[in-house]
Amino acid sequence: MSKIKVLGFDADDTLWVNEIYYRETERELVKLLKDFADEKTVMEQLYHLEIQNLPLYGYGAKGFMLSMIETAIQTSGHRVPAQIIEKIIGLGKELLNKPVILLDGVREVLEYFKTKIPVVLVTKGDLLDQERKLRKSGLASCFHHIEIMSDKQEENYRKLLQRLTIQPEEFMMIGNSLKSDVLPLLKLGSWAVHIPYHTTWIHEKTNEDPHQWERFIAIKKLAALLDILDNEGNILIHE
Image (tube, rainbow, N blue to C red; front, top):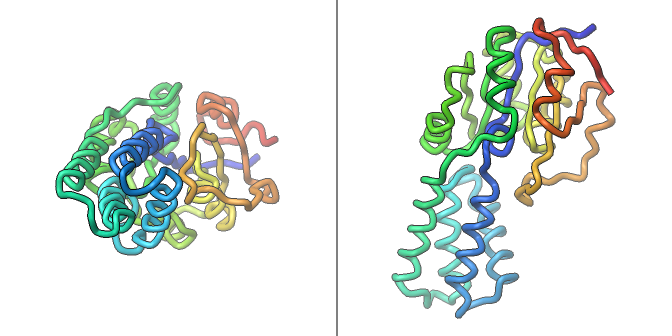
């Protein structure tokens, strides 16, 4: 029977609502730019710029805001008025101040495991933004360690496991993104649990099938984790 020594949780759309706020903001951006371009053009340009800007800005609301401004400039042919740029900045600030709404079962699961297995938060994005969400969530006391990464690639996780002084097979990661929370860990030899969220950023989608790895587990709700691990970290079921 396998035993987990450290349990890792993704944050956005695993512990609390996040992605729907970005979709709402995109719809507002489309409305602001309706005199310059149609929805398809705006969204394609925004996504292109987001991906192009990731190496410079990283993940998070601030980089998203800058990409929205750049989208407005380019789709308008440099004719967008300052008033619209100001409104886009306002959308970005609203995004940074959205409420943190916990998903079902989150507090109960974290409270259960935090006194039994070391629990770590593993998230990526802007440092101030992620710290703000964690503070608003009221969950900080549930974690033995908090890791805010610039990205979630195999090398990022490898360094985390080294800091935690554990072997890959002794770590289990729980998250909503196959690309960021699941596949990198499986490739390292760790356990990974996928909890799908109803909406996913296109950049986080992948065609790679995680079922080819033995240490992949899929569940529909976080509370199901209580049926997978006992209070000592032993894996009870693996389907």
